[in-house]
Length: 158
Image (cartoon, helix red, strand yellow):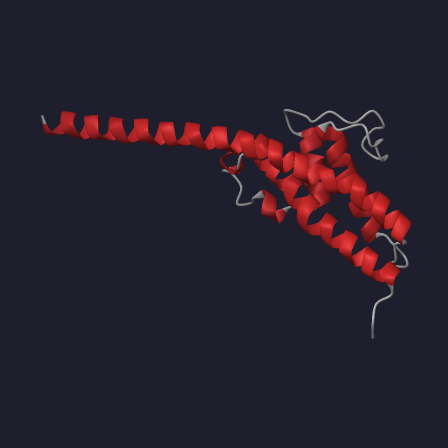
């Protein structure tokens, strides 16, 4: 059994949304709410689906701001805010999951792909620079902690 072009388009877009866009939303969630902040629970963002991730980002402090069209409507292509990016991820995820026929025309595929493709890439690039700074700070903190441990050990021996 071979897939039609429309079915193939649907699966390719679904994969982009499921694997790439959802990962971008989780990476952003982990940046805003580091896993250590969930210490009282034995969960990580990897346990969350797209809807829950976006819901938590909308409701946990600091709350993410919605796009101009709100959380439930597809934002215009020019809106590149984090809220708009998250709304697109959730909106397209819902469109894919609730599709009754599992097809996507080439025209719709190109539009959807273009709308969603830049969001995860832009979010991940922005977060990569933030994560690099965060990693540098973490390394400095760890180095200082090691130096303090050495001083503490030397003091206890004296």
